[in-house]
Image (cartoon, rainbow, N blue to C red; front, side, top):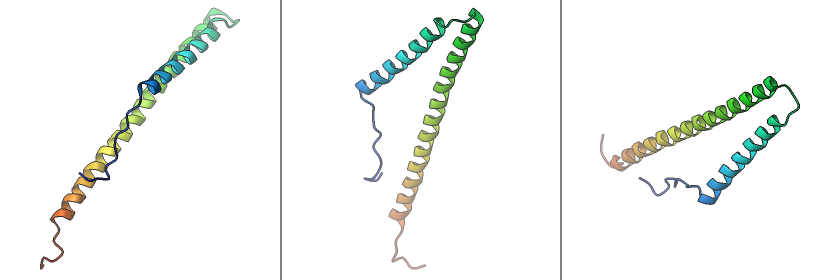
Length: 96
């Protein structure tokens, strides 16, 4: 394609590790807080289920946003390739 095609950036292992550790600490802290909450068992169970639902919803939303962004990049690259092909085939000195 062209020289201006954006390079797909890869996350480092340290960044990935930090994200996983941060998620695990946050989820653990909330679970510990719900477990130690001075409330009936059904209240703690409700809060636990709510946290799990929120967590899975966050993962789903992140995946949907990523997939939409990747689809937009693919369409953009296809459009760029078509434009480059048209420009390469165009002869401005050709008589109509």
